[in-house]
Image (cartoon, rainbow, N blue to C red):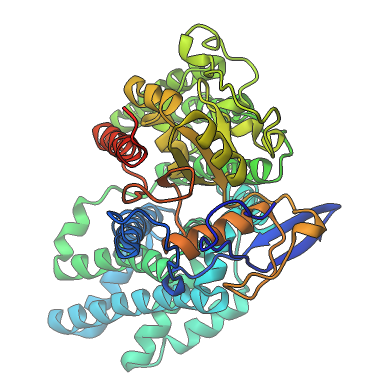
Length: 554
C-alpha cells in the first residue's frame, strides 16, 4: 500500500524491478536508487531539524559508516586472501625458483632486483585489471543489487560450494593449458613484455589454487555494492602475492629461512576449503530469508556450521584425511593451536542451538525469530511485548515479517498504521529502515537493542515501524504505480521503502533510524549503524524529549 495519510510532501518514490524465473521460483531484483541524486522536499520537518541537517546526517551515514569501512574491509580481505594463496602448493614452491631465475638470468643483482620489481608490478596490474573489468561489467548499481538478488545469491552459494569441494581435493579448477603454453612462449621474449607474460603465466598456472580465493573475494566485493570494491580487493590480493617476490629478490639469503615445501601446503588448501563451505551457507540464508522459504532456520544454519567446524578440527588433529594429504605422525605447535581455536569455536556455537544469542556471529546468523527451539523464550519478562490499546486490530504485512520479530517489542510494518498508532498512544515513531540481508542490522539488533536500557525505551517509549527495503513481495496491481520521483514503476514492498528512504533522507544504506511524530515530522537528526549503546540511548532520549516538547507532554 502506498503512503496516503502521511505528509503530502513526503514523496514515496518507486523503482523499476526485473523478474527472473528459475526452476519455478520467481526472484525480483531490487534496483537501488542513487542517493546522490535524491532531494529532500518535505516541508513538514521540525524546524530544529532542517532538510540540510537530514541530508548531512545521511551523508555522514554513507561516508563514515558504510563506504570507507567497506573498502578497507575488502582491501584487508584481499590482502589476507593473497597471503593465503601465497602458501598454496601452486605458488609457494615457485617463490624460490622464480627469485633464483631473476638473479641468475639478469647477470647482476641490481638488474635481477629491477626485473623482480617489474614482475611484481605486472602481477598487481593483472589482478587489479580483473577487478576493474568486474566493475565495468556490472556497474555500481548492479553490484549493490547483488546483495539481495535471489538468482545471484544462489549462484554465489553454488560457486563457493564448488570452490570448497575443489580445495578439499575432489577436482582441480584449471584454465585451458593452451593459454598457459601461449603465455609461457611469450615469456621467453626479453624486456618488459617478457616479464609481463611471465607474470601472466603465474596467474594462469596457479589458478587451481588462487581461483577459489579470487572468486570468493570478488563475490564478497560485488555484494558490498561499492564501485571500486572489486579493484580494491584485487589490489590487496595482488600486493600480498607480489611483495614477497620483490622482497626475496632484495634479500635472497632470506629464502633459506622459509619452511620447506611439504604436506602442510595441501593442509592450507583443505582448511580454506572448509571455510569456503561455511561462508557459502550465508548466501543460501540470504535467499531463504528474502523469499520466505523458511527452510534455513537459525538452528539449521548453526548445525551445519558446527558440523563443518568439528570436521575441520578433526582434520587438524589428523583424525581424517583427504586424497592429497600426507600422514600426520605428530601435531605441530601451530596445528595444535589452530585445532584448539576451532574446537573452542564449536563449543561456543553449541548453546546457540537452544537460543543463546551468540552476539559475535550476529551479522552472519539468521534472525533469532527463526529459532524453532529456544530455551530462553518465556524466561525473561522482556519476552512479552507490551500491549497497545489501539483501534487497529490487524497489523498489515505482519505475516511476512514473522521471522524478523524481536522478543519484547511490538513492531508495525506499514507507515499509515504506525502514524495512526502514534496519534492514539501519544508516542513518537521510530522508523527502522532495515533488510533481510543486512548484516549490520542484525548486529545492531543483537548487540544494541538487546541492552536492557535500550530495550526498555524501544518497548515503552516508541511506536516501532520496521520498513524492509529488500522485501520481494509484490504489491497488489491496484497499488503499483509510476513514481513521480524516479519515473520507474513500483512493484514490491521493498521498492517502496527503499525509494522512500533515498528520496526523503538522501540515504540508501541500512540500518537507518529516524524518529518522527504522528505527522511525519522528523524530530532529531537520523542516524545509521552505531554500536555504542550510550550513543543509541542518547539518540532515543533526544527523540522522546523533542516529541514531548513539540506535543506539550510530560
